[in-house]
Amino acid sequence: DKLKARALIDDFQVLHSQNMRAQFQEDLDAGRVPSFWQLLSKSPVMVITYWALIAVVLLITIVPIYRFFNS
Image 1: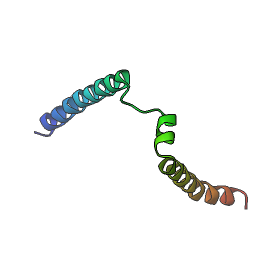
Image 2: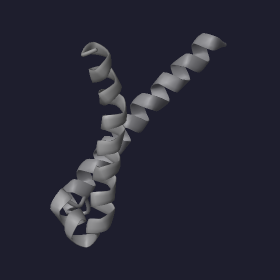
Image 3: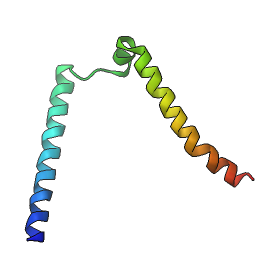
């Protein structure tokens, strides 16, 4: 039962991954995937906020490590 279930899950994941990649490529070819600059021009506050949050997370994770190795 476990092996059969694992095989079904593995098959599903492979098929799902292939379908998602094909859908993304289709969207990319049709121009439905916005570029970074399109996103920035459409909603600059959102993009800047996300980048600021990424910077905060990086600082929270890197600063303690830096201090640990330099003390």
